Structures are given as structure tokens and as C-alpha cells.
Length: 291
Image (tube, rainbow, N blue to C red; front, side):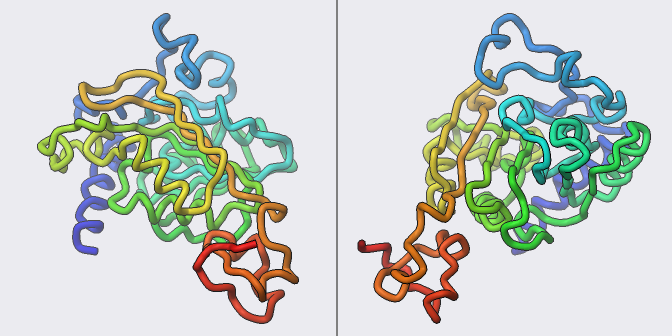
């Protein structure tokens, strides 16, 4: 817990500084990205950064403080009326973009632990005249949201900043509704990333040292119960790491044991919610479904 708190404080200080325009210039891969993609990345899946169309209606102050490595809203396939959660929402750029896509009948929640970023995001939402948004203070490892309340989880180069990334992914699975989607931009470490880079605390806020490898990210998603996992690198951000679009889906109810079968079979914990374990009178055990 002490190490997790140390990482949080390191990240919080860097992003608080960014919110107040005092961030140092060596922000690594998570420097402001208000640039369109180069010709080398324009045709790569998820490689385009914020273009003129996606920036429409979003205040410059939200985009200027955007510290990401991609545009998750470009591949999240957001739909009218959906509820979206943006992890580590920062100045609110992706929240405001998402709000336009889900429309007045939808809602977008931005979750961030940094007071300065939350204040900036709320001011940006007010300036943009966007009302179907909410900004909530909290940690990614313990999201202050009820179970099965979200249709889509997005984030932009944030999960790698957590000191307990599997916990973040488990929390994302918990808050998603059955059939809900996970669509994030993040940094994927090369398998041969050297120990010195991984150990460098300063690099946590540059999105490098905290990155999982592709195999580690896939494993964490699978362990949390996600299916249809896709990890597509988009562009290099470091000698030892690439940005990537990562997508997955939480199983819907049809992927679970029928309620009347729960008393006869075992279910992994990730399926407890969508299976409605209470229907069997007791929670199923964890040895894996056998029918």
C-alpha cells in the first residue's frame, strides 16, 4: 500500500502541475497532443490524434492539458444514450467529446484523483455548455461507482500510471454492465524493456515505467473476465514502448450458466454478477464451470 500511495502522489503532483500550466517540458509520451497524426501514423488503427472534427466544441484549455497517447473515443463506437466512464479524465477532453456522441439521453462520467484537474475539467464543461457530464474524484483501483452501471469504459494513457493495474482492470469489469465495452489508449512495454526503465519512478508520469507488456495486459483482461480482447499498437512512444488501442468486452448474460444451473456447476468470480448467483441461493464456487 505504501508503494501504491507513493506512485499516486508522484502522478498526482505531475498532473496537478499540468493543470495549472506549470508542468515541466519533458512530459515524455504523455505531453499535450493537440497535433494531428503524421503521415506515418494516419492510416494505423487508432493512430490518429485529435483532428479538427473530433475537437469541435471542445475548449482549447481541455485539449492543451490533454496528456495522452491516443484517442480512445475514435475506436470506442459510442452510441446514443450510453453511459461512458473515462478513467483519469484529466482536463475533460475525452469526456466532452464522448458527451457529444452519446447525446442528451446519454451520460459521461470523468474519474480523476487530482483536484486541480477536476476543477479544470468542470470549468471546461461549463465553457462548452455541456450538461450531460459529471466529474468524480476517486482512485482507479477503487472506483466510487456502483456495479454494472457503465456501458463503455475509456481512458487515454492512464492505466499504466497505476501501481496496481490488475485492480484497475478488475474495477473496470465490475462497473461495466454485461456486454459492456472496454476501449482505451495506453502504453505497451516491449518484452525486453530494461529493469532501469521499469524502476525509474520519474517515468511513471511519462507513461513508460508503469507499462505492461502485451502479454501482461492480455492476461490481466482475461483474468478479470473480459473477452474479445484486441491489442493493436499504433505508434512508438519510447525506445522500449509503443502506444496501443486496447479493446475488450465483458461477457453478457448469455455467456453465463443459466440461473437454474448455478447450483450444479462452478463459476469463475468474474461471472458472478452477470450470472445472478443469488438465484441459486448461494454464491457459486470458483473451480470453473463444468457443463
